[in-house]
Image (cartoon, rainbow, N blue to C red; front, side, top):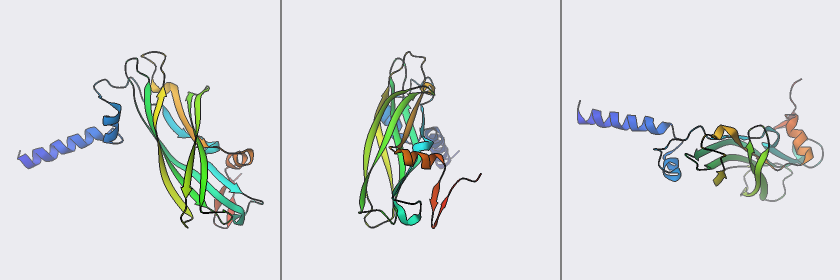
Length: 195
């Protein structure tokens, strides 16, 4: 085999080895991987009832839509071994909108990050503000990183599958009901779920 072919094969093998990681930054941030996690990371997801926020002033028409927001993706990276707690980082992709009834060019949205015992109870919840400056645009996309989530483990055998990391917008009762009904705005109409 020539040196070029060996180099290409070595690079391909290295790329495949790193493909299991979301990026190389996790390898450096979360430490030496010679002690593998005893299980997967906690599942991270947006809560359906709080994954969107639509501010409507008055009747549900496009003309009355103010600021909107949607969680487009959630990713978690973690590291734990031995008796160490789970140390996680979370990345949340947001899309924000400025409807016809939005006042001003900037808006502060509040979103939460909660760690739960899977399907049981909330262990901890924190609310974070995110300021969005639209600069004359009607849509803005941002990714927020929460980089210091520490989840205590009862023992060495407690894996990340025992926990969930849930994110969502802080919504009021009207917005919660709107989300639960599956309503979404499309240009010129409001679409409710089909029966």
